[in-house]
Image (cartoon, rainbow, N blue to C red; front, top):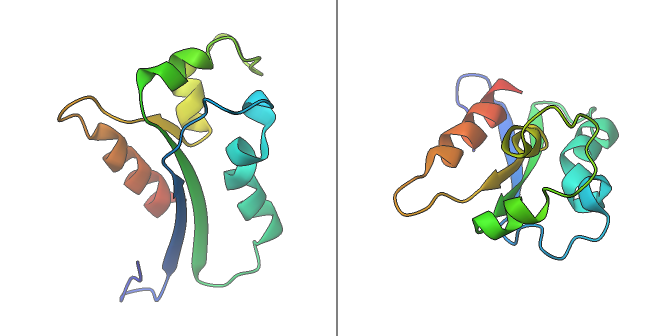
Length: 107
């Protein structure tokens, strides 16, 4: 999306496949992509790059509960959200969409 006010563009990669097949846990390239984009491409003017992972069910989020985390005191949902991993809402719960949009615009 391109903002007419600032001429800023947002390029966002969204992976809807979740984490079920990730072997490298939170250190996987897939999970770390959002950091990689910021580090490797900071010089792109007026373009903000982002990436998000959508876990298609609570199976994915519960499946990562045993993954090693840097901070075990943070609950798994908050920890995952901090890494741009969101669980798809059940039924009519699309609250993850507003969280993603907020992160895109505020970064």
